[in-house]
Image (cartoon, rainbow, N blue to C red; front, side, top):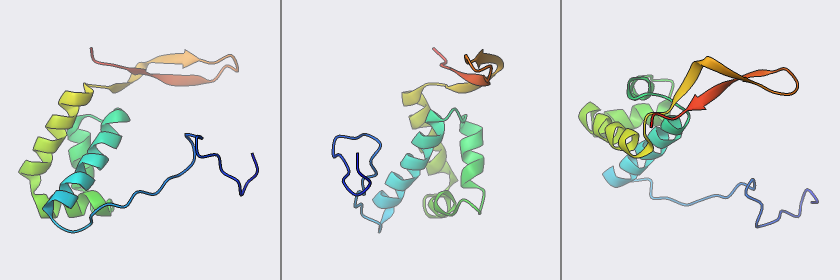
Length: 109
């Protein structure tokens, strides 16, 4: 496909989405997006919470200051309940045909 002629059906094409940026609901939406992304990546609840306490993560830190720790913990618990407990399996590796070892994602159910 030509560089300047993107295919609208290509799932790898970046698409911008406009969202409300003011108010508590917007902050909740932003926090849930962060939580979902890292839960899907295999982070556990404690590790996600540490991210919100890390000032270099500007978005999560702002959400924590705005919503408070109790609300962030509730959002994390809700998302973990939906997603299940995925963790990165350190004890198991998959070896590719090229001999590269990759960690295996294991689901908790």
